[in-house]
Length: 247
Image 1 (cartoon, one colour):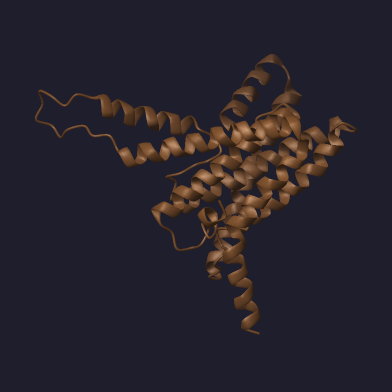
Image 2 (tube, rainbow, N blue to C red):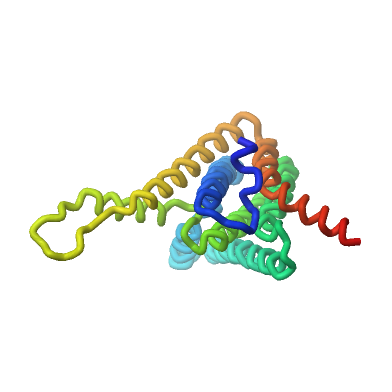
């Protein structure tokens, strides 16, 4: 596992690195999303559902629910904004860890999620909303990382677009090119394999996350945070050594 993910956030990008990073982050996102639902009864990566809930709540007169949905949306957007700030700040300073800085922050926030979880049972009215907001921020943060790295080709916190794209490519694969002089329809098999890997990563993470939260509780966030730290450890250590060596 470690050799496969070690160094995947280096600034020098390749298709293989983007794919491996995408699958790893999809796994983490699936675990957080499924585990978070068991913890607080709310999926936190699905902003389509959140906005639908806001509309439904407004029509039904549940203004407080609608307002909280907007807070969730704002937290997701704030996470994406934070990634943009951190990555651009790092790139302008030629940091090897520029793409890893948001993941470093995410790992620290996941470690905070544990104490929040232990407090939920004692003060649910306060800590459940705070936990939901924190998880929405984390999802926005993470999704923006791989989106920026892959130039919007890969997203990891939701699979609606992935399943749609997979359906399109499968449709092309089944299309019979006959009776026409037009260019033949061909499926992009590389794209199809990537989509399959990302969906499998998200599903696998969801299963393990749900099992972990059901049987172990909030301690499940610790190995997820460690995976993210491994992703950024090498470039971050390179930056530290260079800064110390320049003094």
